[in-house]
Image 1 (cartoon, protein in one colour):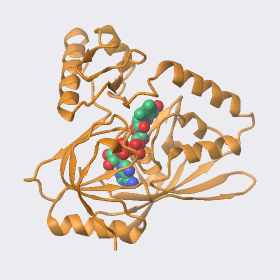
Image 2 (cartoon, rainbow, N blue to C red; image 1 turned 45 degrees about the horizontal axis):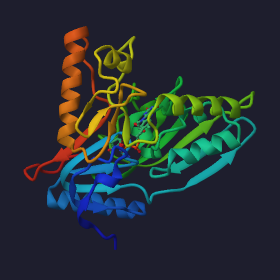
Image 3 (cartoon, helix red, strand yellow; image 1 turned 180 degrees about the vertical axis):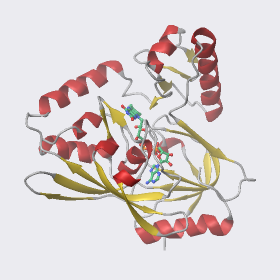
Image 4 (cartoon, helix red, strand yellow; image 1 turned 30 degrees about the vertical axis):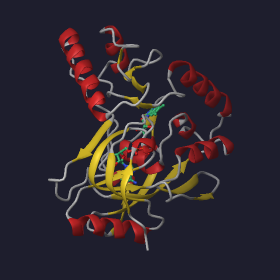
Length: 296
Ligand SMILES: Cc1cc2nc3c(=O)[nH]c(=O)nc-3n(C[C@H](O)[C@H](O)[C@H](O)COP(=O)(O)OP(=O)(O)OC[C@H]3O[C@@H](n4cnc5c(N)ncnc54)[C@H](O)[C@@H]3O)c2cc1C
């Protein structure tokens, strides 16, 4: 029987190290245990949140159930002359796919190196970098609908956009199958170039949640934030990195309220000076006891 913990501190589950307390917290190891979690939240009429690597998420108090995918791990690989197929469970770290991509000299996937995402979180966010998005390689998603039914959808049936997908609204991603093409040129050099670039331009050794805002069309959120003087700006324990203005950094024990204030201030300053409305990429998640069942 799956143990469901009570009053779990969420701080260590986000890469920004900002988190309140979850009323309930579960780490399922199988499809059946995920379905049990869904039933648990339905029966109690409380919200639920699916947590992957926590690298795009800021958590407050969650008066509901947080489902952590970290124990749903594993990959299956098969190949023919033209392609390599990889099926990965949702909690598998993206790093495993990227290492495989470099070892097998596969096109594209190695470009998504350098962020601590899970496969499920990367699909849900349609993570992308250096001209590729995870949906470019996606063949099929196996997911559990919020009614508890196992479903499959081909990638072309799903609507992916810039940092956007039908998940988690459609359901809990259980596994994803990708198809990769072998590269005609060695990818290892380009992999190293991107790794060096990330190290130089992003605060990867600090508590951060990556890009705070999406890039507005034709521009870069980082450029706009820098323009209004927010690169390296700090208020208390929270600020925008000196290396990359769009990366929020937690210098101590920042709280979700600090994040809300900083985001509000940044949006106002950018709007006043440029007329551009920045949209959050990072997800701020919290719920109160008056919320009934819903997906956060
Ligand atoms: C240093 C750093 C660099 C980054 N660089 C990039 C970058 O270059 N490009 C980029 O796109 N992102 C980047 N990010 C942001 C982040 O890594 C991505 O958005 C990533 O895809 C989030 O994955 P996660 O597993 O951490 O998701 P989480 O933060 O845990 O969750 C994100 C969303 O996905 C949903 N979700 C997670 N798992 C599932 C599931 N199994 N089923 C349904 N829904 C699910 C959650 O409910 C939530 O809505 C960076 C982050 C950091 C810290």
